[in-house]
Amino acid sequence: MNLDFKIKNLLFICLIFLGVFNQYYSQAQKESSFKTGADQPEKYIPLLRNKTVGVVTNQTGLMLDRTHLVDFLIKNNIRIKAIFAPEHGFRGDADAGETVKNGTDAKTGIPIISLYGNNKKPTPEQLKGIDIVVFDIQDVGVRFYTYISTLTYLMEAAAENHVEVMVLDRPNPHDGYTDGPVLKQKWSSFVGLHEVPVVYGLTIGEYGKMVNGEKWLKNGIQAKYTLVSMKNYHKKQRYAISDKPSPNLPNDKSINLYPSLCFFEGTQVSVGRGTSLPFQIYGSPWTKGLPYSFTPKPNSGAKDPFLNGKLCYGENLSEYPEDLRELNMEWVIKAYRHYKNPEQDFFLKNLWFDKLAGTDELRKQIIAGTSISDIKKSWQPDLKKFEKIRSKYIVYQD
Image 1 (cartoon, rainbow, N blue to C red):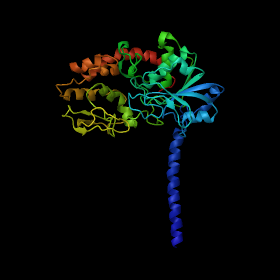
Image 2 (image 1 turned 30 degrees about the vertical axis):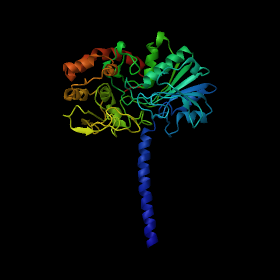
Image 3 (image 1 turned 135 degrees about the vertical axis):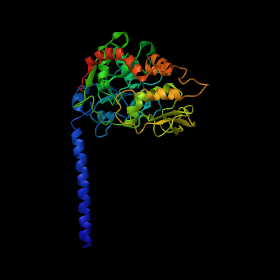
Image 4 (image 1 turned 90 degrees about the vertical axis):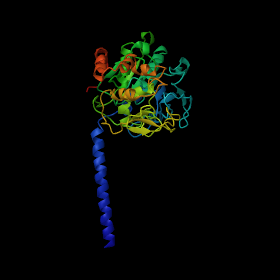
């Protein structure tokens, strides 16, 4: 009897396991028709055969089975001369703004060349002997996120040195809509090179096509550009991404709030770097009228976070509805109105806020007390002009 009871229990557990597995499998099957560029090697491996290759990638350059693109290429006998690392480094663990150093990948022995810091654009020497550079990075579809600038400088250097660029496309978590002020050329910087809105509604592969097609590279040159597009991708649908794109965007919530909260980086207000909720909370010691409190402390994603060790008052947005498909200016304006510090202006003196906004108009509107609806209305003429440009480079339909 005891043995029968154990066998029955074992069978029952197996049935439960199989039910769970089948449920998971069916969910996976529903998404199996979607593939990133990297997950379609039949499209790009033949184009890389017998060529010397460079790769621009980081920790997000993963295939569906979690194999890193670099390892996959080596396994398929593709000759890689160099790995180029963007902001946050090849392994994605460097702080925002932290210098990324050159080095050697311990696993493969391939040289790693930093494209962040003083060397944002590959030099002729670094591209010497390379036939094609493969770009595979998970972007977040926001103008001040620097991977589109890295792609731009790569394309420019490649065009100047007769090197081809191949982009393996990945989903944009902010695809299917555009919003925010369009950058004015005066405010062009590494956190915004082109006259596009904060949210521009293109995948990184489409963005590269736009840069090339509009001749936005220096002197109007154009790169030899190959896009390995995704399979069964829809711009308004949201997809799981391979890995966190940077240390302080650890999950879907932080990525979703990022376009709205990043403006705080140009103010005396913390966005939660040095906490467990980066880009999901905001606050400062001088906004005491707000309901939530936290204290930034050093952690793996922020070795010396802004307002380190200071008690901050603000809001916790981690429970905010996930799929925000517009810029929410309420939080920056609310913090500005609650800010009480006679010794320091709300906006940093280096005008970093204006670089993030791509214009000084937004800062002036906030100071003047302009309503959110009027602020958004002021963006519309430039957004309509941009939409005409954007429409020419859309590869995937809504």
